[in-house]
Image 1 (tube, one colour):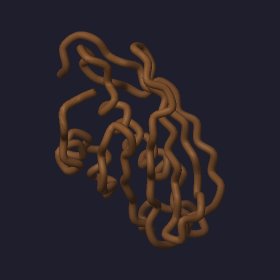
Image 2 (tube, one colour):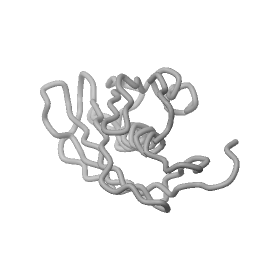
Image 3 (tube, one colour):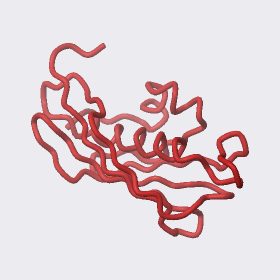
Length: 138
């Protein structure tokens, strides 16, 4: 396990996520929680939040969860595979992501991220595999 980090500190290491407006509210090894507000600039035709925005949220929150579960001596983590099932369109409000580890190995970490709307309805679900990076960070 890694040291304690504040959510804002972790988000600052991901400029793309911060630029999209992703907010990280909770970051522990057991559960990482973040959200993204619906905006017309991030939509497809019909006013639905773009799947790429949903995947960016899931990948970012899931990556933090994986990072917080790195084995001793690891330098970092990187997504090697990600699968998302889109279950409902988000046309207003926020999408909330909750990531939990499914597998914590020395080479691979698997994280599942549930995406829910403001009414707690499942919008999508992402399962991602993160590789454990060895060597020096940076």
